[in-house]
Length: 260
Image 1 (spheres, one colour):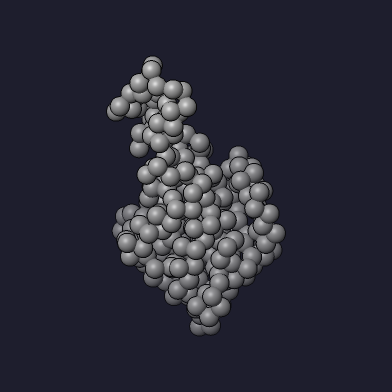
Image 2 (cartoon, helix red, strand yellow):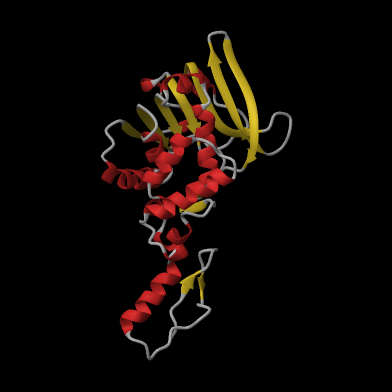
């Protein structure tokens, strides 16, 4: 009986060319392996990550610090094994509980916007960073490569537990995971030089703005001013106050309050 393989949607599909039953078992296993890995490369290969970064560069993204982090962090270990084959495609993937891991291009763009802030331009790093929505922890590890300190908040206990397990092998002493209400930010470690959110709402929570340091920058998906749909919203805090700008259209899961 021919082996099944995963198609791009993550469902089981039949291979185009069935394995010949008379071939040696080790040869059949090699064929099956080639069908499950893109371009004949293992998912742990640095070349797979480098090709993902090359595609992002081709799309016009220019944030070299985040590219360097993406070169180091294997995205496939943060998703379900059944979806690992799609980990280096530019697509969001479900991580359970109605949540997703963002597309690599969206992650890169949001961090690129953070690096355009005054503090990051002056220092070359994201400083003290607040992440709202830990999810599976992939972006958290990327931020850990780019920031002096990372506080990441997740409201869903099962995802918080999953992120803790995913981050444990990295031994990131400068990262703290918090099970809490992300809409409240995290006052004990404020103010933050960088704030990034992985969920979108109608308005920016006041706590985020209150916890943003002078010279700091906030990047979050929010509903477009006076219209429908989400866009990436950037807020900079200057000595004289807050300045807001709107950027590309995006689609994120809804921002919710409370702890589950």
